[in-house]
Length: 412
Ligand SMILES: [Zn+2]
Image 1: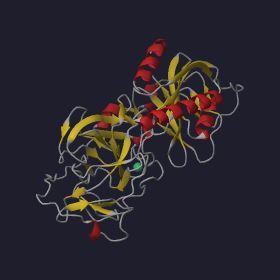
Image 2: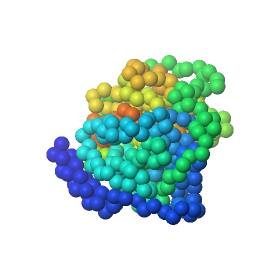
Image 3: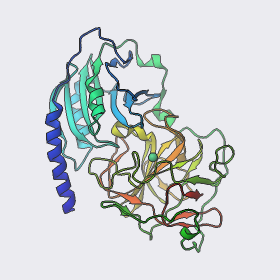
Image 4: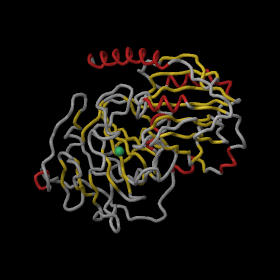
């Protein structure tokens, strides 16, 4: 607790310094200059896009329609959204509600101009990466813009943003509504395996595993999931199989492993702490179970600075522990629902930033202790990343993976 207070204090000092150094306005470019990207219906463009960036346009229509600029690792640099269902006159209430959605975080607020338009800038705003968020009034519309404050390219892309009068309306895009695409279900019906923990789970199967033994190292700020609480592998007997390079019912702990890529952070107060998150390659529509019984906290598209996670399901496992399954192709539960170990919470996919097939098909799975949830975004921040320990599997006679090693083979 004490250390958290110091950490928060340091973060707010840094934030003030950074905030000042960011400057409070964005220069207006000369009219007629060539744009590196434009979206006529959104009414925005970017003058410059650094090398190795990509613009991802929303495939589904939510209350916020937009585009996301991502780097080579598909991490958010800048996201621009038009809040097309919100009246620009509501800007002050919208900003207030947005700030209130992050309890425990002191968010600085300043009036400014973005590309010559009236705006409110907020910082720091929690996310999978930490962002600054600008609400901008331009051409009679209310825009919400997130930019990554940890990567100078985020600010660079934000500074190259311009607005122009839109041409055409949203219906011209023919987008499917995000809420309709949320509950997409597989085009076939699998036989479900009713899971029952074997009455006598085998002791450590760790010694039976091929390759080097896992190192049980828990970095400062991270925690171990308690061995007294049940955990299971999150896929079914029919996962992977023919043509996938994996035997049916098996996957691996990788490609992203503990501490790699976006799998970072133990107890950062304004970010998702995913040091111990794992990626498991699966095939599209493979069944996803919760890692244990619990109650669904959030089921839907991740928003704001968490947009890269796609469709997510967050389950409260009790005792302050939460779990998140991300990049799902479809969701099968709703918030408030109780789930057991045989409840299909969704299906594996590669969703992210309002698109399917945004990433290779895999299950991103994270465990958290005492974290916070921004409910409008399905966004987890703060708390601690928890290491999966003693993960029960049902296939092959059943057993437990005590620690998960890099690229470890894991059974259903
Ligand atoms: Zn991942």
